[in-house]
Image (cartoon, rainbow, N blue to C red; front, side):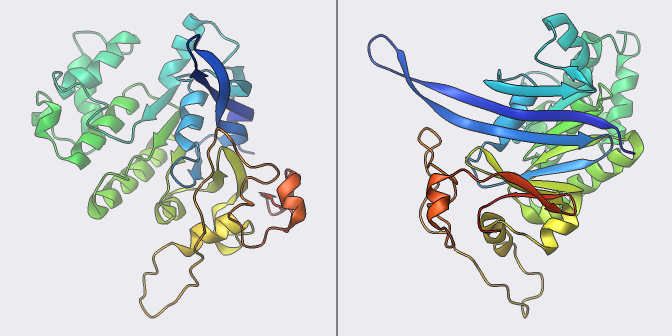
Length: 321
């Protein structure tokens, strides 16, 4: 039986809206609104949705880069919001984040060997005498050459900089990596190399990933389970094969219809959603998707759907399913 590594229950993250001379709170942006996720050791959970759906905020709130509004986050059974700063610091090496933009996440004035090595020194995983050897080992694991250790970030391509970001995360021997759109800024050929690297590292290190992406083709290739977010809420979760063969929520079906068809002669009915995503500061009542859903009925406009099990570890929040 798989061991639960990360357990997120009813997580909420609201950002206050300030206005007026007294800078009072006049509302909240509901970036994450009641999300629950479970990730087992060694598996990859994909989190997908349109831009602005709150995917990145979920990852950062899990790692306490944002403070939660409500909910519970447990890592290896430890409540991350119930520990003090010292206890949290001791857990940090086991939970790492790979950023979407590999260049902005690196200090342009710091050589990449130092950027990777400093985290090892900070957490006592290497000494000044052997840190260079450890850095070279991690660089080789991520497809970087030893002669590149003293170069600066601007001397690397986008794909190489993403490898540096991965190496910096791996340097601390994590159990969980939250990858926030790690291949979206890369060329297609480089994307394939980085995805293969993720899979190789998972096999060698037994890593678990929370893989945040809007590219369903990448998610289908890499992930074992998938969750679909819309406007801060989870619409549907299922094992990968189950979700891609039997999507139930109208929003999931619309996302699936946008996946490019590899064989030109094959045709897929394209579902074009009308209108724009509503503001998370003033989300619709009832089902948040009802303003764009072609199948919405009266109950969708007034009552929030229950997130319920429909079989095969498949969960969906929809009145019409």
